[in-house]
Image (cartoon, rainbow, N blue to C red; front, side, top):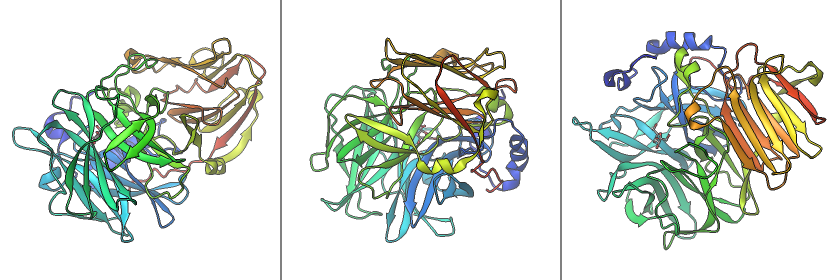
Length: 487
Ligand code: FRU
């Protein structure tokens, strides 16, 4: 792939014509998704500013316009009425102020006085390329444009390294105070969360201290994209600890997970009631964000980047684009675990039922696999003769499920591991599998576990085989995410 110079990575997008040809080129890709959010051009990473407001869902993504690499980041805006059908709204935050001169990095949304406010990290760098991260605020106007504040809310804390970013805004009703969580790194290179607070959404912010999370003082080198959600009477700390090996996660170093517990804003202590759990057991999932303003005490809606910071996706990189988001999922708590289920309204995407006896998979489809107990093996995206593809294997003697993508012709990120095994407390009863043109999301037992992975099947790899008596249903899914050129 082409080498990108710093000048190429950090050039501003002045006019949409600069990426029009790139859009035409990638629109012809056989791997463009049909019901997943993907970059209009270039690279997508984290979801940002996810919020429901006045019956609409707004979501933004980290966007580098010019190609499949990380560089000067913008926030790109997409909108939906049902969380399934999405339309492109265009660029929202441009890195055009001194405080965000090298990128408008990740952050969150919060409604105040009937308006949506977006809090993000201004990734400032000086002439020596020293990073100074600012916490910044913009107001989103009804027409999708933004009003930027002339100054950031606050700058970095000198007692930590330059890695301080990804503000998550929370309003505590009891204390009548706004809080901002910032993912950070201590000078001893361990990860943590910094807490700021204010009585006003747009001024008077003060550093309150580090979030205390007993038992997690030395857990990874940086915590990216932190958040605390209140679901089903519990608090859930969601974050991405980096450079840490977690059992069962093979060679992967960057994770997205959660701890269930109890948050005390007065003492800034999150008391865990259990261990750290990985959110999504697949290969490609990171930087998850829950929608703000949901107002349902028992649920959250979560979306993540279907990618990883240390991974490459050579097939689409060659075509000039990279990344997509996962399907939004519904989160609830069962026992000591988060349950993730596909949204009920996804059923509206079902177009027609396909006869499973044909053993073929439409390019965008949903598969439902009801299991009668016992061990189970299904191969998807394999060739007609049953070779290759992704193996989904459940071994009832160990009650563990394995997802192995090493059989795909287009292999990628091999060194990070191509097979993941995960114990299933409740055995295997049902799988719901969503296959888009370049992704697979496998939901186990209505939410016990989810595995998200990118996959780039060749034209021959659109079959499946079953080695037992489970009942399969397959539906083609209609496209629901616009792929038009809106900048
Ligand atoms: C996570 C992340 C964030 C940062 C953003 C930059 O993937 O590194 O911490 O704000 O991506 O694009």
